[in-house]
Image (cartoon, rainbow, N blue to C red; front, side, top):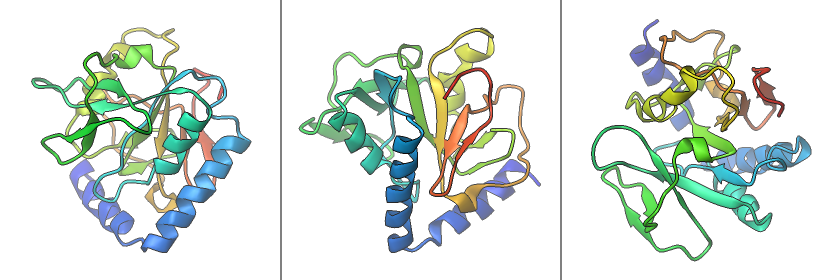
Length: 197
């Protein structure tokens, strides 16, 4: 099955989840993240603001701020596809980017390599830790530096997904970066020995 066909099917499955199930999943994933100490060894944490049916990461974002960690969200580039990450606080002033996603008005965003942990949205994931994204290539471009440096240790890559987004196997390309883990409402799936999570 092609990526585009899988993307269409998995988005439909994800979008069919009722709001109460989404809220319950967000609470369950936060409990799992805390139980597994996912946020403990990271000082600078990248997280996304959910859009278009993505797993709701707001509870985790609030927990990051509560733990007094530095929290960063993606900022779209004017040109190209490499995301930067701007710091966010409870009182940050926000603007909408061209996709309607909120971004903080931060003059000096960081590069991905400056983060310790990056929580990423996805459309689907498989048992090897491969991630199917929206197809825009932003995270692929942003994380391209990790493919060329085998011992690069940051950031740890953790996908956020509903359990219904898990599939046995995804088609993947040479430029696809496997995740270290995926957090769902049921489990923290660990895939890589590249990092201890």
